Image (cartoon, rainbow, N blue to C red):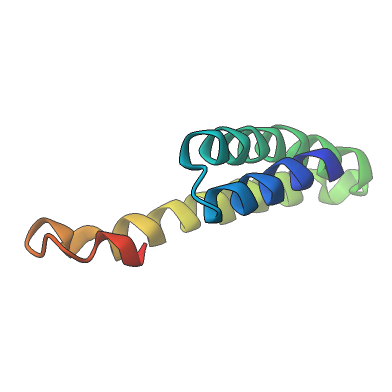
Length: 86
C-alpha cells in the first residue's frame, strides 16, 4: 500500500513539473496497484462478519468516484475550453 502511494505521489510530482508522459505512467501504476492491493488489505483486516460489506464498500466508493468524474465532465461536449478543470 505504501509503495502504491509513493508511486502515485511521485507521479503527480513529476506530472506537475511538466514530465507528462512519465508522470502519467507512475500515476497509473500507483492507481492500479492501489485498486489491486486495497481490497486484499481490507479482506485480510476486516472481521469475518464484516468482510463482504467492507469489500463491497470499497467497490461502491470507487464506482461513485468514477460517476462523479464523468458527471463533472458531461457538459464538456458543448464547451470546448473547460476540460482542464477536471
